[in-house]
Image 1 (cartoon, helix red, strand yellow):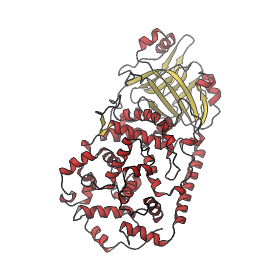
Image 2: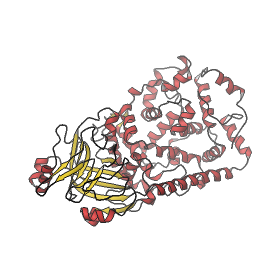
Image 3: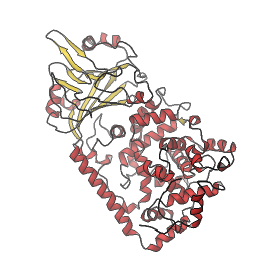
Image 4: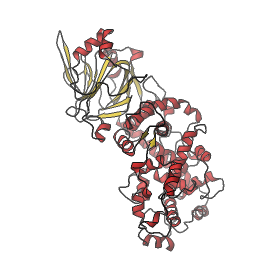
Length: 567
């Protein structure tokens, strides 16, 4: 639906200039018009309904934007950060040299630029670095922009080349941009929250009471922040994250982290009456436990793309309810014929010798568990009450007793949730055992050597070992050579050969059923149908074709075709 007439002569002339414009105003006008043409008339109509009769070039205040994006007004830091972020994007491609307030058209540009697919279509450069653009937008604060502005004149003086301007991000040196740790923690907390409550672009958003759990999301986000910069043990005003740290961590362990922001921005293209209740969000997750919470589920969702089905999560085994024993776990879990999540959490042991003095069972475990030949046995700062260690293991196959053999296919993945988030993926079949002869549970190990009078674990290079009493566990990272890959985070920065080990006293063990491929496929089909239905209702709500013309007149693009093209 929309205008189908040809591009006006004025715009055609600009296209013939091979990306050259006389001044910044013309360049901004070109990208503004280009943005509007990428939206359907139904989307523009829904978007315009928020403006109470104002034109699309009217300014949008910070409080108004926060209301539209469902950000609590008392979270001043988050409101300011999001407004500045959208302000930078709304001035694309002149992020350094133009400082206009956010307008309706500018907000439309931000909607495009927060969607990786639409961003590439809008920018017109195939290998454009979407993450770099987001980092610059979040890291370029108002005071920095003013300083950068005073150091440069118009963007088009140097070569008058749009492609060059877009490719170098308006001359902003990303290596000189740093994200303040406090602001980044707010951002990551918000993104995790949105992962729970905004999984689709047309779902009803919860009321502000959902933000009551903000502190729990903040604790989860701290684990993501530490992954970006391991030196951040407690957030202070002097700490920051560079682009390399930001991008490498997102690519390695949280590829889905910005999907929720994209979906939130898409909400602006729907009228409130066209939003629908969504079965995917956290409000449908009822069986909350100590380990399986909405924040931890959000952490898993950003690291395990398309593997978790919230409506189909089934509580199979909780150690604190059914007893910490292999027999109890087997009775509860082994009948589930679909993927599962094993969650194990406990208190990190800082000093083996000291802990062994008062715990002979741990001393026995250490005698059976081979020492790491080299490396740091405790790579994380587990002091100052940060001793919680949590791992989640995605198991794609049904569990079974394997005293000599193995189960667990290539989809097996260990996700470390605390104190630092990380991902360890299987590279071979046969990654797990469930040994009822006294060997316990092993992920990434060989079968233990068990005799009548002795036992010794055969620990893999990347492995999680859980003793047969479900009392102690050890995670080892010693490089390549096993059934699991080294740290995805360290691999991305070429430090995957860094050896370390974490041993902990188990406090909680849980197993959850995830639902099979059939359930996930049915859920996806329902979601796609509901989105299509919402778009159909949008088009029905359009009053007349005259409204189409009025919308395009407001944007100044009467006669333009709705197509993207390339720069």
